[in-house]
Image (cartoon, rainbow, N blue to C red; front, side, top):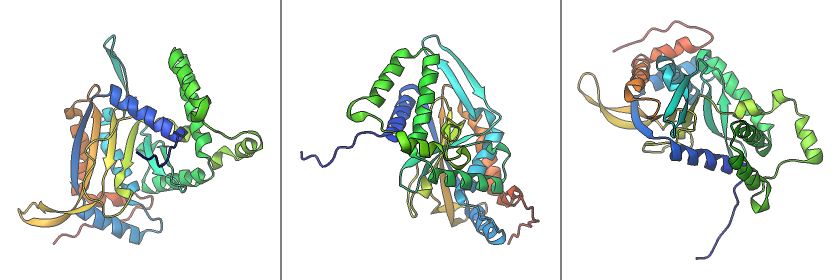
Amino acid sequence: MKLKNTEHFGIQRKIVANMTSESWRSIPHVSYIYEADVTELFSLFREMNSEYNTKITFNTLMLKIITEGLKAAPVMNSHINFNRRLVRGQINTFENINISMPAILPDGKMMTLNLRNFENRNLDDMTSYINDVTKRAQNSNLDEALFSVSLHDTIEGLKKGHLLKTVYRLVGAKTGKHRIKTLSGKAKREYEAIPEAERLTFRDLEQGTVTVSNIGSTYLGQKGAMALLEIIPPQVCAFGVGAVQKKPAVTENNKIEIRQMLPICIAFDHRALDFGEIAPFMKRLGEIFENPEIIFSWRSEKRNFRRITA
């Protein structure tokens, strides 16, 4: 075979490879595809964007809907600590909903951002927050930002007594062709001179409480659904939002109609959760999709909305 190209892993690919490998090595995944009829929701979403000055993306709307679902099933917003050798474990459930969301940056690289404290944010707050993070990402050096996360993880590993693992990571990061190249000298000083309020910091990139991947936003017109995705430890849940697609469906009056359907993959760690603990999440989503006018109450400026039925 004729080799076309060889590219050694950069820090972003190293982090993704390491975390996903750990995910599949240690987590017993359970996956469920929730298919939502978003015909009315999508219609009201377009109507809402035509009436308000601040436009809301469909991605932000889905983050809000998933957040509402997590509030109904709070144990899904947890981290797990499990020792297989001693068969001991604990589940730490959080009040704050910090969403790890993979995002594609202007240079085409992918970075997982930590969107903090979404449990009490309305759609306008969420939009402002995401816009600010996106703006700061444009002023950030991806390798420098990710190296700060890697350094923190290394220090935490040492505190937990993972000496050998830490040594391997240092050798892999600092030697040979696989050495991670970060800024130095004048370039580093200039970068660090950028105020932290104007660039990404460790807090923007550290582990969230749950992960939401919007695969449907990668390109228009895609078909199919994500059937499984990795859960990033110590999180116990991950969500893969697909693309809205037209499909035949049976309505309440037993008629077959072409509806807009949205597949959402729900993956959870079976060590921490059983399906019964996922059910409240799906029930809450069902309530929202059946009564989509609720999205108007999630705006800073409240307006009266009267649902019009035929």
